Length: 468
Ligand SMILES: Cc1cc2nc3c(=O)[nH]c(=O)nc-3n(C[C@H](O)[C@H](O)[C@H](O)COP(=O)(O)O)c2cc1C
Ligand SMILES: [Mn+2]
Image (tube, rainbow, N blue to C red; front, top):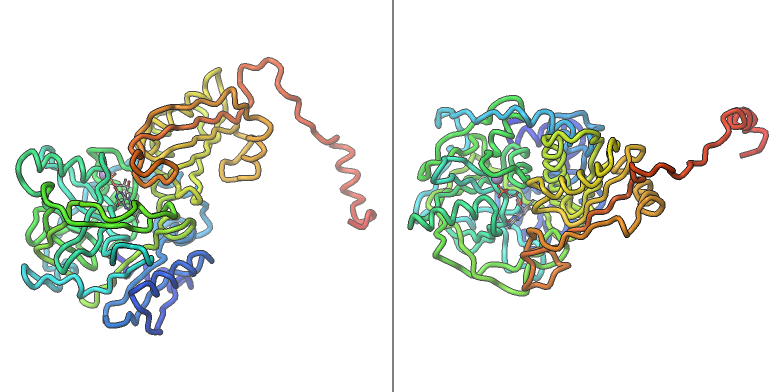
């Protein structure tokens, strides 16, 4: 899969996409249709008739595990756990992108330069009534380059449409674009950036993944695809751009310049703040786009819908890969429930082999790149329980868990979006480590109740006799 058009074709072939021909307004209507559709795990939607625009909008791309499997090129009946396993396995063989001739790059088919740049040309949706405006960047990512090492980062950070050539940014502290921006600031230079809308959906999922610092999401994408991602130089920025992107905005972010941005109805189901905040923004200098481009948006808001499924894959797969990389024995599986947006809560199953092993796994989870940012609660269960089997996890939390054995970490890196913290004190969170295993070191373990195998066989053979 090279681009959004391959995804559309793959979904149409499998009956996983619906074209909406009726006229739909970008102002709330489109997002509300997508949201309702996603709450029913409906198909990907291609809105072909957006009021006042020729450009279609695609939504609900990542909403179901089936479509996530299609994007990853895995069997359609894969579970999230299967996708985590495939990601961890394939993701190890990093493969850098390959630069192609701009003449062969569809993303260069059309161009607006300088004063011609007009982002209102695209059907940018407004998602929720109290949002600060239209959000150009939801299913997008921002490409930046580290001025010291040349490391190229892809990161998904929301982007509000603030003017015909202005996109707001919200680079949360410590995110890779934020780290890079501070370096450019120290050099007294603005940071060159490119925002990408519409491409191989895997690149967006990687933009929203907890890939470690100094590793390019491009190289991970190459590993997962088994072939290098085709890129092309920007027109005005020295950055590698996905050659098959639908819409590319090139520009710069100046750490010393601000515009009012927000609020936005976030994936937590709450607003990110109480009003607008001054934030840095992309000053767009050039836009290139394909003929008949497709605009792409993802519904954020209350779980579980598109963004939550995206993160359940990206954050969950990263956690599993990063745990495996620590080479701890006995790891069986992990589940990052989409209900927690795949990031606040993780359940890990393991086979215990020595005293303190469960504690090792719990503390390891919150020390991964994913866990050190994303996790608030980690639950570890024995290997007779699948972590995605929530009734069995509830059983373990009832009959194996003991509050006296859980641990609270008082301070950890947080997200300013966590609505469980007061709005002005969200930089630091606590973490809860819950050991729901039977302690390895117990000499006398609880004796499980088994049925008598002979009696079981006998009564099963007589089942119809009992009228059951
Ligand atoms: C739809 C969507 C919107 C997001 N918006 C933001 C945002 O505004 N700011 C932010 O820092 N992270 C946001 N994230 C999460 C980041 O994409 C994620 O933490 C990722 O790891 C950032 O890339 P980086 O690790 O290269 O910095 C968003 C994720 C998704 C799926
Ligand atoms: Mn990164």
